[in-house]
Image 1 (cartoon, helix red, strand yellow):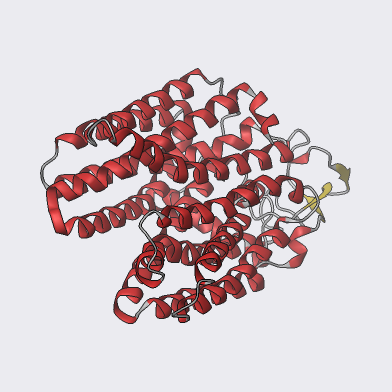
Image 2: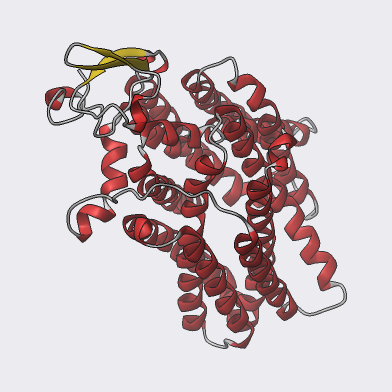
Length: 456
């Protein structure tokens, strides 16, 4: 899998992603300590609101950036986002009011909502080969998991000899290093392609419309919700399970979260080989179908009030959650690349970024509210039910024929059109076969065959 790092451009971009993630992790720890200094006992409420603001920024800003991404050089957009994040992080140590924290968090996450989808949409151009791109997706999954384990440990080590304000400076350094690496990367030159047409709203919603138009992407919306429900249980209630339900020491919270990360990383390492032989649909739906089973195991642990078996069972259950979520999430980029033509790729990745975080915006508060008001078992049942319904919907929405090549004829396309590579001329057009698409060249339903370049 490390062979993709031989590509200099990808190596620089991946290093930029990793360094920025570490900087963000340091900022998360420092933000918690800052909130406690400002709000004292209300720090939990402040952090909860800050996380909600983060999700709102992701949901609102990413589609807007996707609408104008074709007009802005990708390097300029990514470097500008890094510099904006560095500037915000530099001001955080000087705030002394809660509202200032909220404003700066929105600005910080708005910049992240600009950087991440642009980075994701760029990688298919850097690594056009299917196998290389799949390995890159696994590398990104590993980067997120390792950051969740490494950043808190690094922050703890730094806090032994410095104050938390210096962690913000580490965040600034991370974003500046990320910007430097992006500048140093030789980005591929792509032919100028028009962005989505229409007015401002039409452009901002182009990626979302793509998701609702293509069956496999409609299924992905459901899979996002299933994963969000599972990750909400782990993120919100791990400390409750460890400290209250199992009466374990505080340090075991890290072990439980580490088990989740270990399960996710193991799958990310194995998936490139699996996806060489097994269709994306089979892999992703298998991961989703595993989630309700793991919720059932979590329910058994939650219902049990005694027994030394509960702690190793919790670790195994959390590892299974991580493995199942990674099985669903890792191939996501392959689906989007296959579904979106070049001119719609940036809006499509922005829509995935926005809509997946919208799912978390629903499940995180639900997990917290259900656990606090009705108890831990009720939270497991509610989130498990959401996962089950979302998974069943995904299975029904994603047709099995989506994984097979479909012969079709294109009419109205010039002989040199990039999509016709490998096609052969037939009376009335050009014939070839590939997995079904949902772009303007492959209209489905009532509109099939309409317009220049449509398939029939």
